[in-house]
Image 1: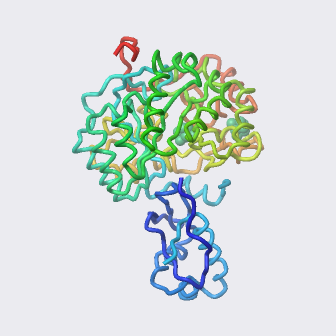
Image 2 (image 1 turned 45 degrees about the vertical axis):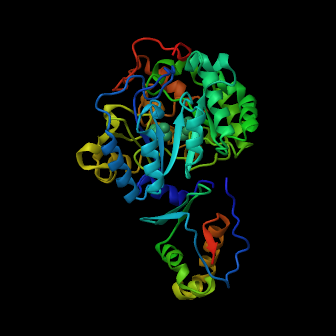
Image 3 (image 1 turned 30 degrees about the vertical axis):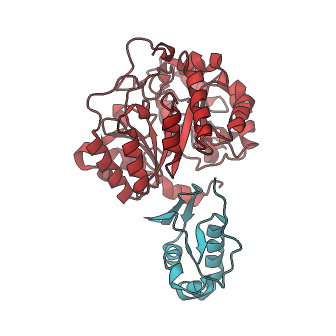
Length: 93
Length: 371
Ligand code: SF4
Ligand code: SF4
């Protein structure tokens, strides 16, 4: 089984959703499934889903979070991305 | 992943598409296991054609179903087996399929090894031929081991060895662990349910309370062992086991049978749990709009389990296990770890057990060594 080989999560670098991941919208946000490591992850808000979908428009994770999330929630969104990274869902560009 | 209550509530209200969609490709099987959940044996003349099956794959790919669990019968008996699974994988629908292994010769193993996003579960019901063959028939253990050897030789990677927990096999947990380790395989244990032919053997074969307690402790120590979320009724014994810990029937789980009928779960092949047929208006229409599924997505009442301190962990157990042992949906699970299910059954006196509706069992006993 593939483990995460995506390295350290540097939020000043550009990342995007791994091409092995399928996203499916749900009423609470979305489900993400990684076809390689077979992990299923829940994205628990539509805002987080929007952020994940738009990651590759930005030059860094920090920029993406700044553009998408309200100021007081940035920590939480970065944390959610960090946990997606731990599950192997993100890919460095 | 522990149980996340808010998320679980969402799941109980249903999803845009199932997470765990089982598709039984055929009722034909060259074995005749005594506990077969789908009473398989003979092919049904009305089984979906290749054209229809390809259409369903396209539809579930469009719904973004992430993967399908393919079973049967023995799915590899269908002549279009490879065509179907290759089409699914091309459409980015992962395939997990369950087989008795009899058709995995060297060539098949190599072809399987060449497909991405494919998981294989080879079923056995004992860690030795004697134990296994009592349930699966003479020669079936040797055949399953040959399949495992062929998969290993073809470098398939970590396939799964799948075992239904019976009163006998539950005594061989360490042997199964060694068997899997020897192949670099993953062990997968699932619950025996009184479904299909399992209705007839459940009383003698289901693990005792003491065995279930030992099984729970064994599983807690081994989070790497897969269970398909099937032992959540044992979570009432302490820390929850890995998984969603809920009955997903019609909410995250469903079954498409070989003739296109959609049931709430693979273990409830019975008219009462039939939601519709894919031949009428496709699968999505059944999933999103069937009356049965809508009712299963309503908040459920804990019924007789309401006063149990472990209800949050166990949710009253498995609907199929209750219904086919003659209990009500609101009764405790027949294998309730506190014995409340057994008490409820005893209190019923005369037990009425629904008979699973379609039965494709063969009328004569089979032995694969006689092929
Ligand atoms: S009484 Fe009901 S909820 Fe409690 S452990 Fe038994 S089956 Fe589970
Ligand atoms: S009825 Fe039983 S087997 Fe089916 S989804 Fe519910 S808990 Fe699982």
